[in-house]
Length: 154
Figure 1 (cartoon, rainbow, N blue to C red):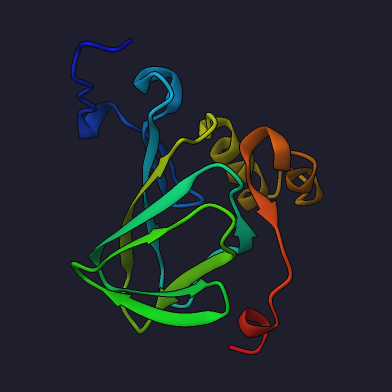
Figure 2 (cartoon, one colour):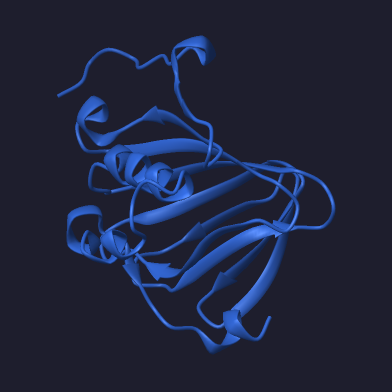
């Protein structure tokens, strides 16, 4: 059990520049309690296609800008200072909304280790990894892609 607070200094955090993800704390460092990262989305950039987590809840805190989010079959827009919790087994997707850069703090609780997922995704963004590889890691990272007519028709 971790008995020491976890401090991640900005200068020491791993930054994945192609995807705009900064890795903060993963489950091995938090005794399985949570994983957290910060993402920066350029205007109109899709953050994640429709997916769900069978075990994890995902928390979104909007640091700046606006984020369009699918939760189940509902589309909502979150603005700076807004907070959202998506429970397990709830389809969700998100993208920057509006004309400004969007910055979001994400926390997943009861999550599997995820930093390697973001590193894999970085390879996809850089064109070094086939996106089809992501589908083969669904169980490993508890990231299960789903179809959403609501998201397609947004």
